[in-house]
Image 1 (cartoon, one colour):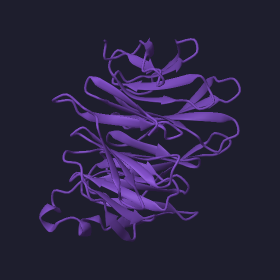
Image 2 (cartoon, helix red, strand yellow; image 1 turned 90 degrees about the vertical axis):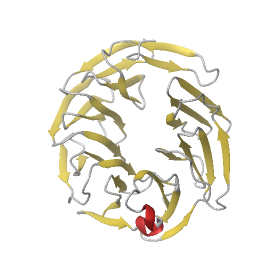
Image 3 (cartoon, rainbow, N blue to C red; image 1 turned 120 degrees about the horizontal axis):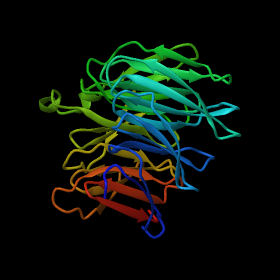
Length: 327
């Protein structure tokens, strides 16, 4: 298989449906565009491509980046006319692509140029935030007329960002950095206020200098914030990160970068470790169901994704993909 191919699979039987070919280098990010038959992909060849899942053809190739594109994300914003994609890459550019909801045509691109490499992006129906190696965080708002406004937040982190994740129900997001800090950002109507989560107080003193936050997620009703560290432990805080609640007993034995809330339940989250274990956590009882991925030696689980109903989970890694159903 050419590693620049994008493969589409049927979750019911695990069979490959189609391979999309067109990128000259490996794809780095993929997203489906809601309410359309389109899929967008970003790649290390500095391009963003739009594909039609129905005709299985390339619809458009967008070439606004000059270096590797690290993410492409479909945005579900409160906008009456257009849908938007957001991309960012090694060149420091943030690009917004507008697609008319009726004609399904991509009409214009709005570009912002920032310093450093960009590799963190998330959004909700009101805002989009991006971050990367420059330690700065930029928040974007798109109004009904399609005008994109940029706001640079106060620089708090001293090193590059590891993650940026929005909550499900509120205008707030959490960032984690190589400096060991975790920050919760919340919109008060005019500005973005920030709260530093005192996570190092819950790390053993001998490990505080080595601790790094790898990922974080809120449960589905935003009542709890779950932070995954490079020590394999998941620490639980209240919604705004001001009150520590507990640490799950039963850490991952190797590094882990994946943690996700179950969409169909406010009481469950998933995590996957490089040791090849899927853990399903009960937020209330702290009980954990462990599922071995039965990985071969030197095969790590790098990424995973949950279906919208929370019943199917796909785990991908080095030369493998596994599908779990009925979870």
